[in-house]
Length: 178
Image (cartoon, rainbow, N blue to C red; front, side, top):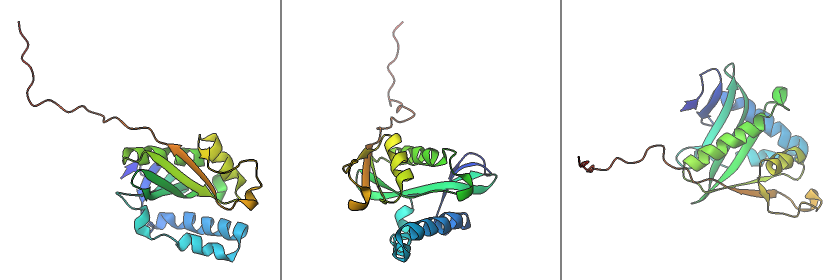
């Protein structure tokens, strides 16, 4: 299922989709450059099924048919989706694309019935920490502490309960009296 035209907008994909390759390549490079060679393990930690419906999703934001940003969530628990794989293409940063992806992940998770969203980011990713704080996430750590002394930085945010678009039609409608 996709949102928007085939050339633009959000598209739900699987990890096997060739469009995901830039996300995987650039995220791996980012993690390794910030955290060292052991960061390869983070990219292999979760099976593809973790980001598949009905419990998860992997979204790409496309422009002219090319991925410019993306992200995923997976089931953390029965009521909580956990954001993973947030990415903005290196040629498209500083345009607010990560914020759009995050908002779409939140919307999609709420529509799937999740009531809370959770995530962690690395202590060497101040831009991610800033994004989550500005998007209304509550830090589950001391924001005044040196991030390098904390380890992964956890955040959470409640999701709105979505109201169904249509109300059920009653089986028996009252007959108006004249």
